[in-house]
Image (tube, rainbow, N blue to C red; front, side):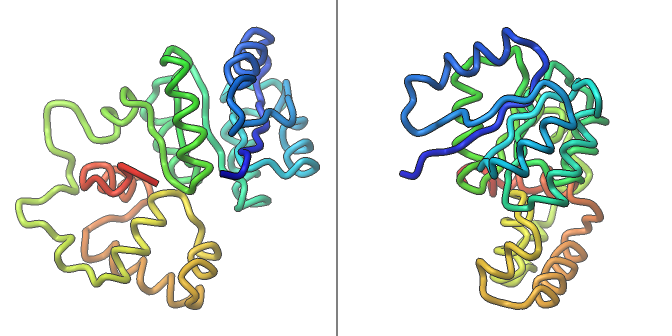
Length: 217
């Protein structure tokens, strides 16, 4: 397995030191850079080309959401994993729309962060179990789950495109991976979303979680 190169962006020294100590004995992960503010995170990501950026939301200089948005626009092949104390549904919805690949709470067990890094580096999506419960909804079925399983209406290609899109892949990445044009990808995605009654990526991710599409990368 190729080594996963990560950049850590967090302004807390203890978090940086703790994460480095966590992965030092893991030969599959290498910390190639550290940033303590938003602008530095963007600059280092451009210079070092990490596989994964582990990003705190509360960064000085530029909020983590803006950093994530810029990373997704400028470096679509770099996966963004949020590591935060925030458990706000609005934050999560906005980040999913931007296209982040994972969200881990700082209060989670260290093993969860390692699992998340590996999952997103492999092209999958990882949501902290507490966050996943927020996405799916507690105590009731989410709006997008119907008594009739609409996924049976999807063509094989539509399902494939939607599953990969839910995992965070861009249309350009899907085009390269599936060897079909970007316009065709957009058509499959639009038709699939319409069949499922979905309008946003956050809804697609929620549907994918419910259906078990993101159980493995």
